[in-house]
Image 1: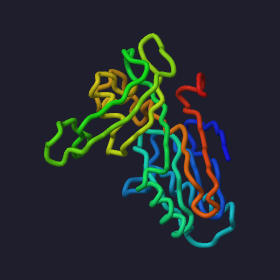
Image 2: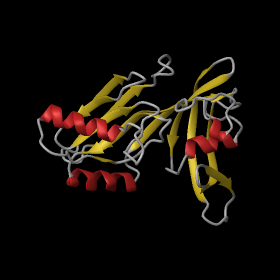
Image 3: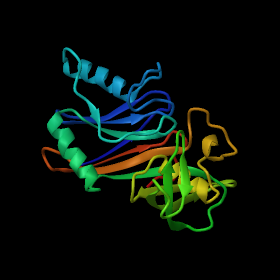
Length: 227
């Protein structure tokens, strides 16, 4: 099953839901899961939606299978039961859940497609680029394909081979092309709570029916040129 959705920038969108899973689109500036702040979270929004849609009393079971950074927008997969969560977590560990990202990076990339490989260290508020053999350094690998050139920026689709902390943001910064708006990683532009990085597509097997599912949501910052 393929589903295409177009999100608005300011509010989450429930893209798909059944008794076992829920797929939602997170706006930039929202948390994936709640914390001690009053920042709105996608999980909180989705739980309220489930209570209303399915007329469920009490707090609904809903657990994110993966997370997005606060300034990143796009698709997030949730499990609605503990059995679904266990099976989806297993798919994730086996790298059977594929996520494609869409990003706008500063400058013009020299190569239309490339494989980026770095060793990243999880710092306090950002990922640091180290070298092989460094203590706590973990291998980070992604593949990108140029989708569109602008005068001073490049749109790329990104397929992750690994899932490290701030991986995409750190790796593009390391090659001199930070994500548009990502001041933390050296961007000249300041997106405040929004950067031009978006979880665009997701592919996975339904944890109960075993149907192959795919979902796509276009980013608010670029709605042209998507396949």
